[in-house]
Length: 288
Image 1 (tube, helix red, strand yellow):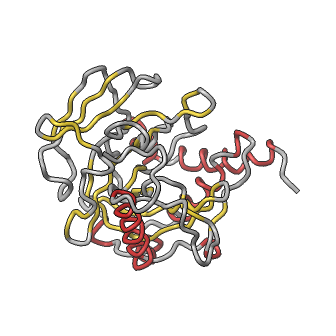
Image 2: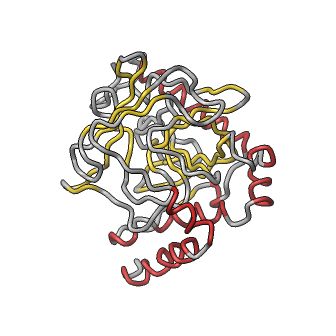
């Protein structure tokens, strides 16, 4: 029997309350706010060990409107953050493109169907999408990955969600929208959303003070207890205020270890390569 909306909302509100009450949350809520203005240009990449070629981001339109776009350029040429930024960052790390800085609510994403794939705010039924409460981690994607909707997972019996691989970054710093950061993979959750497989890679900024101490899920649980369960529950409940059902998780809801996370990265990179090479139907996705 499906739970009524009021019963569904309460655990989500509890998650919001517990995280928002922490002193760290309050501090980073202030530092994580990013002000975008029309035509603003940012150059370079802040995170140590990340994408090191000279790159700039340019914004058009006002944040919080349908016109807002954050575009990427290299040597004055527009590039795609999905296709042109390399996946690997060296030393076992991978490049993460930040779409949603921690403690913000606007549902920003790499627009996979638009020319050059700028970052824009997602829309549903003609309205801009916002989370009902802030997300407590930096959220983004790995470039040069794709979850193929034509491939069914042999054990979970669901197919990919037609998007790049999502990343939940658990470091202490708020990463700027459009920044490219070298992250260490830690583990991965097999979220099942509306019958689609939507992997959530858990990672940490290579430059974070805790990065040297965290190499796998067991380290994360020991050094930062509650983070994995917090991520799982946030993504389980976040759509319920809209009267949507709970999201599920495969593999008995376990966060799979680093070795499995790397396997997911490699598999989604191979699926992206097949997409770029024209071996699978692209549909409305922008690839050029």
